[in-house]
Length: 453
Image (cartoon, rainbow, N blue to C red; front, side, top):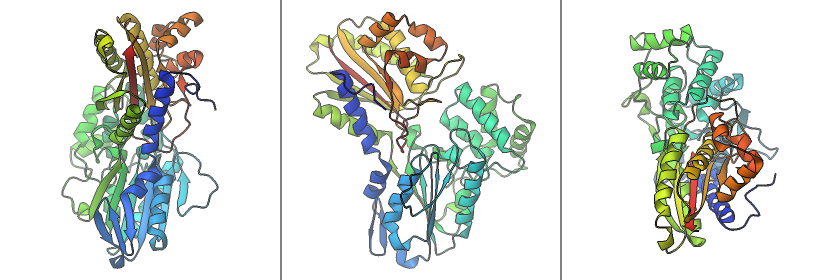
């Protein structure tokens, strides 16, 4: 598929080179091989040593959008010492020979295959003994792929609640609090199944702040949230009354102590666990900064923790760019502003889109209102997993020519925004970014290129 960014001159070419460099830096195979090395019977993970000579069996459980590459890369390091391994993936794996068993499951809404895969993961973890070593590789999308509803909760009820929370604009942190308290594997429960084996978790982070308890809902890490927190989130989004009776009953039983809480800090199940973040949003941003410098820009980090509603965030950035326009003529060289994080969208319209496309569309609306006459600009936002919402696009980009094209086509950006139809808008203007699934996920990347007009 032809990428609409490719082939245009100036800022679009620069922007493409920058985001491609960012994606290359968070390639999961590269991250694993850079973080894990083996010399004889010693495996080093980011400098910490694990003795294979004292280990009987070595297992791998890998799940998430980067599951296949992470697991297979680790398998090449462990080589003949690998006993068996499992990769739970969101899309088909090629026909190339693999070292791991692969199960394809659904994302972002789990399905029966997600449940089957979770049971298989628990089997592997439970089979590990005191002299065994279990590697767990986690990446974005893991919460949906590793789904095992708690006793009394059906998959269908959990699916419905997940859909409702996504449409309401819940953050990933809020969504995963609910998931953990309706699960039989999240919130440290995979680590409990593996105890007393040693558990080493390798993580490519897709959450703001790299919180190990939030990433993939923390199956091997302790959980600070409670059933009371889960209820408060549902009430906040006015979903408590509409939630199924079985969901409300479990949360109420948890609040009253009738159902065990998720595992907390200091639980014996974590006595032999360790976790390492081998890649995150800053990894991508640093690579983007390096590429921007090579291309003659003055790169500036703005944030790696953007959060909140896409439209409000876009308004803040547009106001900032408007302020910069006042001094654009004094810029010694073009600026490249870099940001990352993960925004949300409260869906009220009938259109198609995702948080990145909505951010860029909202930015266009705000930039038209602002006084940026002295500024040449480009705004780009994409999901590093190559998927923005329920679409085939990774995100979108826009510059002053995009606004002119929209006017020529008779497109009112504000109307498309009101209908949450950012995909429809940018498909017509030719500003979609199409990467296909990238096999990684470190949240989103935003690039702002600026120079005097």
